[in-house]
Every structure is written in C-alpha cells, then in structure tokens.
Image (cartoon, rainbow, N blue to C red; front, side):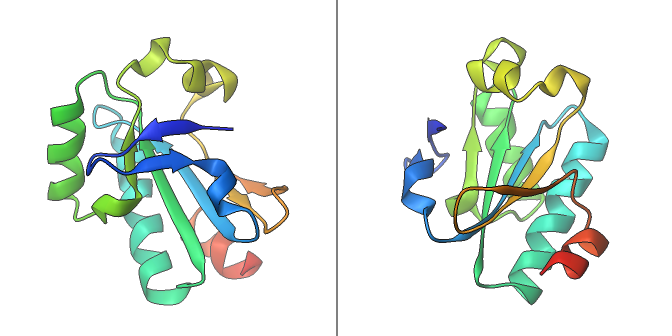
Length: 126
C-alpha cells in the first residue's frame, strides 16, 4: 500500500482504487526518459482509456520542482503525487527504483498485469 499527499493536497491511499484498473507511474524531473513516459502515459489514458485511473508519483527531493514540472508537462494535478524523500523514500526502495523508474498496470483485483509500460503496450493490454 502506498500512502502519500498529492500536490493539490489530496490523499493517496491505494486501497481507494480497489475494483479499478490503475496505471501507476514513477518518475522524476531530473530523469528525462521517465518524465517523457509520464507525459505519454497521461495523455494516452486521457484520450483512450478514461476507465483507467492514472497515478503519477514523482520521486523528486523538492516538491516545488515536482509541481512546476507537472504543470509544465500539463499532467492532471489530481493524479500527481510527490514522495519528497526521493531516493531515500520507502517507496523508492520497495519498488526497486534504483534500477530505473517503472510503470505498472494493475487490474481491478490489485494484480500487476504489466511493468514498464509504453503507449503501445497499453494499447495491446487494454
């Protein structure tokens, strides 16, 4: 379970997403490939899969950098969260993000169906 506060003050409790398909994406402003993937996943889901929830978690040490980047990238702020402990966070360690940022497709039952998503992979799976 992940529990964070969002950039708009909303709470993230992964238990609230039971019964829903979710794309969970980890990224950081300093990591260009993860940032680009965040934008692509967000845009794809907005346009093609409105029944899938998007949760975007930045692992930047500075919340204001995260917020400015998400605004610049036009990411829906309701889906945007930041773990300001960055590489020192529990989330970073539990998801083995030192080997690279990842994204996950999680089904309605909480089962991980795919890792390291691209828009092409999402199109196949959804």
